[in-house]
Length: 202
Image (cartoon, rainbow, N blue to C red; front, side, top):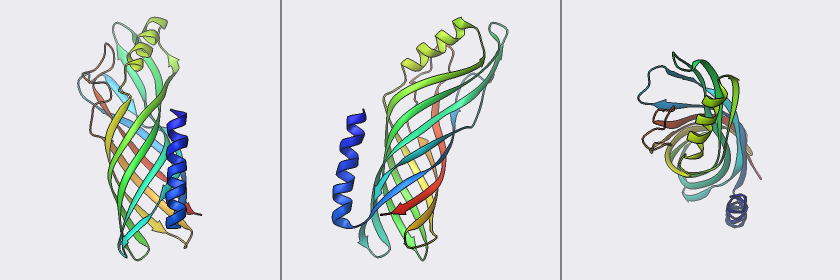
């Protein structure tokens, strides 16, 4: 997967150099899941980060095509209680390579970002505050079967604070369930992520 990121980043830099519109993006993620099924499976937003590259290809003065490639941390925190396993607290971090393919509509110093995104899962880790070893092994096995690629939708707003620097806020939501029909201890869910960060034009 690291080779995919390297190749895609090199392609963006090559195209962006010709278009003279390469930007570096970095910032914070606040991620959670939208789930169905188990009402006792309570989740909270967890922090993470994103970083990557983007290009801006003008089509007309008020509209441009803006693909990106980002490393992005997603996941959720769990506070789960049942008669069988007792009180269980842990967090799941899913690491993705995101490829947003965005349309950018500009007006003054503001721009609206809108479009699809393809995400490629690179790794999943769990961090535990409490929970039995058997339950931990069950969750680890469930997470090993997550989908390796997901299609999402992205909407966001950018504010140009200078000719070189933009503040960017976005919301991304998976169109597909990350774990198909759910697993033994994890209900069906889709990722949702709030991103805030800066874009710096090179």
